[in-house]
Amino acid sequence: MSDAPAPLRILVVGAGATGGYFGGRLAAAGRDVTFLVRPARAARLARDGLAIRSPRGDARIAAPAHVTAATLTDPFDLVLLSCKAYDLDAAMADFAPAVAERTAILPLLNGMRHLDALDARFGAARVLGGTCAISAALDGDGTIVHLNDLHSLSFGERDGRPSARIAAIAAALRGAVFDARASEAILRDMWEKWVFLAALAGITCLLRAAVGDIVAAGGGGLALALLEECRETAAAAGFAPREAFMAHAAAMLSAAGSGFTASMLRDIERGGRIEADHIIADLIRRRDALGLPAPALLPVVRAHLAAYEARRVRAG
Image: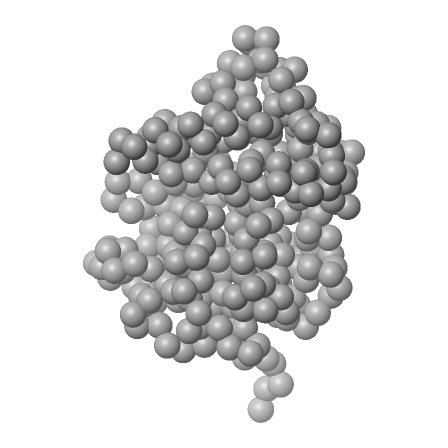
């Protein structure tokens, strides 16, 4: 009889661009993956399967296992959560039946506010830290289109300690095509991503342009000033970004000719909902709570995004 641990049962909440990509890669690698989806997506998965088109290799799962909120009853070992921040409350209600005593929840949302909500609902002991880096989208027929060759996922205990469940998750994610890394500093990793994302989303949404166009218009200094406001917040919170990270972030935000934009700008351009409160407003709230001086640019970004949201809601 083998003493090897049983394979993890993994519930991926959603089969959109991010959850569908990482969950699809895991399913293609033979892991025990079930997708929690809405009825319309369930019907499409049953009819067409799940397809990934990627520079790292295409994949297709002909009959991915899936459930809806109405049919989810069994507990899972790992819940992989990649919804938008504004869908978090609904997502927590939907996947709650999957959470048992030993279930680990691995959120891949941006920012930090979701940790408070997940802790309050399920208990901090069940909630890991996590972050991912990927650019992907769904096309018109539901195919997940991976837009570049970056596809990484980091995870870890929030206190930085190694654990048996982190080792089990690392084993489950190993060999599933994407880059998976267990981190002993996952909260710092999450803050670093937040710092960069807030600066990128802030400047590209405020000026409605790609990085290269902003630089060409003489706005590169604004991007770097916004980055510094975000870095200052993380440092005051006890998670100062590494020098190498800041150098890389500054280079990306000041690259002449770059077509780089934030997904938030793409959401605005199509008239969609945005994560302004989670990414920008919460950063300002944390600055205020830490007693930092009022920033110059972050409130301008917040007001710009709030005005967009008000106009979007009014338009119906």
